[in-house]
Length: 377
Image (cartoon, helix red, strand yellow):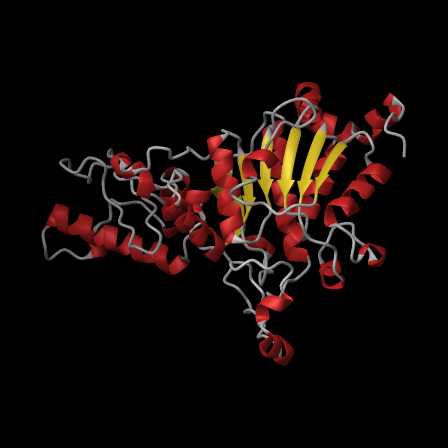
């Protein structure tokens, strides 16, 4: 397919995006250079939407080939692509659908040694964004550390396997993705590498950071849904021959056992990544609600504890919570205070409280609350 399509055809293909972002925002997207690492279920859907949006150039990095078992979730692969490189599969798609997008396919595995090289300039200029769709923790950490060292913004996909609920997907800074096992392990590995991803563990004690700690700007897409299933057991053949012989590559930290995947889940993650990326590239970033909603039970528990504490403060130790009639708060208000205002973090230390108990208190502790004029913290 020729790359030099008539301008009128290209303009018509991208007209809805131009209407959405406006002329200036659309022009920024059209001039954007993006590198996507991982071209499987999540990455392929993200890449396709970036191409359809008309970014200037996309670098696609993935060492793997299309397999029959990956057809349930890959965005464009067909039976004819089985055994072929995933990056070449996506390049062919671009040639047939968006020939005006420059594609740089690289069939390599990311390592700590080559990460910087893979983040080199694209289409004559530096990368505007890196999107991490890798499902191996060590590899993700090596890539993201290199992004921090080169000061390149990054988006990262967390685990999509064993997930299904479309209402549980969130977009948030890595430090706030607290209920995703992959995100939890990734933060632990990054801390071990001395990477400052904005987590309270490093921010509150700068003296303990590694001197070369890169400031990593990374937002992630994750699901706080508990996994619905577990890794499949090794087959008798794998046990007999040795599990390592059945991996795609002979790397110690790569997972060999299979994680069940509902095909729609990686697609949701990939499209969420693409939407977040395109809005950022257009200079119109999304402002996500970064915390999962608190449970009804927790909201009621927090409100009851607050009423009890305030009643005793104002009326004495024998006062009951229902005597706190001046506190006009409902359980639904707790969600707004905890997540919308304080983002699920302690107002004093800024630590993510995670599973530790949350506690509401008045902002001005020395003043009486009964006159309804004082703020809650």
